[in-house]
Structures are given as C-alpha cells and as structure tokens.
Length: 105
Image: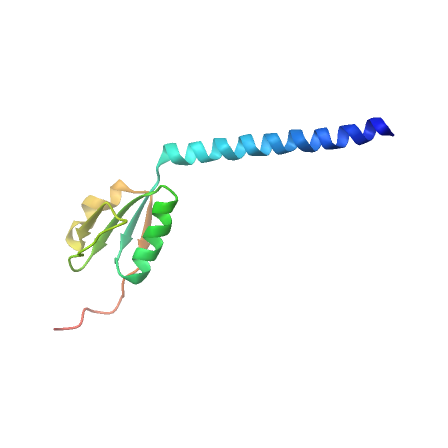
C-alpha cells in the first residue's frame, strides 16, 4: 500500500513536467512563426484587436481610409489603395470597417 502511494505523486510530477515541456515547446514554435495580422479599418475595434495580437507577439499591419497619427501597435498603416501589396505580408485579416458607403463631407 505504501508503495502505491509513492507512485501516484511521482506520476503526477512526471505528467506535470511533460505538460510544462509541451507548453514551452508550443510557445517557442509560436514565437518562431511570428504570425501576422492585417487590420482593415484601424478605428476603436481594429486597435483593440491589434493590441491583443501584438501582446501575442504577432506582427501587426493596418490599413485605414484616413491617416493615423499614432499607429502603435501596428508597424505600419497603409492606405486602403495598397491592400494588394499589404495582404500577402500576413496570415490573418481582420475587417473592422463599416460596409456602408462613405458619407459625403
């Protein structure tokens, strides 16, 4: 009986070590892959998602209709006319812009 009690905690420790090792390997793979996010529409929603993606070590690019004073956390903010140049640079696209026609000023 005493022998069984000793094996239980050892197996738990070994399983815990294996889980930690797997998590560290996954983290290293994610950091090495450096996935990217393109945010089309860099308003309130686009910036919030970009901040979270940057926190996960993603490369963040954005496209916006009008110039942006502070692009952080995006590396670059492209004009919408350059979408064809920007899209191949990232893995994921977030569309966070209105679909209605642009209002006349």
